[in-house]
Length: 229
Ligand SMILES: O=C(CO)[C@@H](O)[C@H](O)COP(=O)(O)O
Ligand SMILES: [Fe+2]
Image 1 (tube, helix red, strand yellow):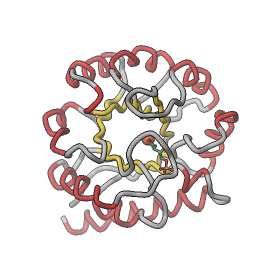
Image 2: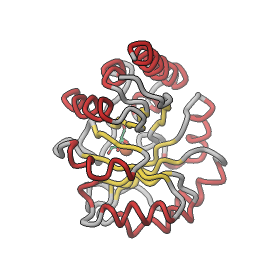
Image 3: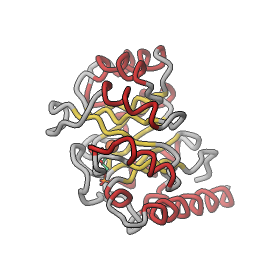
Image 4: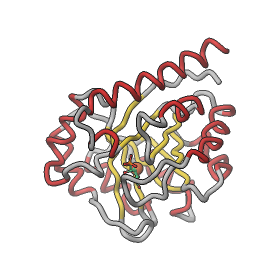
């Protein structure tokens, strides 16, 4: 299905050396990343904890101008909107399962000047995003149970991506979890254009080559879809 969306590769820094977060982020951008995917976990929505807006505020000046996609794996995400926008975040991606007031959270994010991402966990049907699709900038399809990097890619989530791409040709669709060179072709074929990859990139001796491989696959799939239009 053709789309006007561009291919964007956004490495997750979750599996990187977090004691060197600033230099790790700089290195990923030097290796050809298009944006950075920063995984925020609160120990409530997911059984793990990472970092919050105070860390993001310190990180911001280390990689000026780089798009920060905040993956908010937190309960009641609306409570963190102000802190994240003050810290310099660009996109606030929260989970549809995490709040009773999705519309209110979307409104708060937009009023704070950030882009809106809305995600579904593997157990949530993609139809849960449909009521909000016209209000968001990006849809996130999780291909692992959120909370940890280095998990196995769930290929049975690809019909969710196909469902979205067939109906919303110009929507940014992000896939996150276990993505790497071994499965990028099915992710790209399904229609995703924003690719999060953590372990496959930060765990590689050649992150630039991995990012290039991911980019090549998505760009080929986008080009093929445009020709089929
Ligand atoms: O949000 C998450 C995990 O909850 C992801 O962003 C992972 O951190 C991606 O890492 P890999 O699965 O690619 O190692
Ligand atoms: Fe993530």
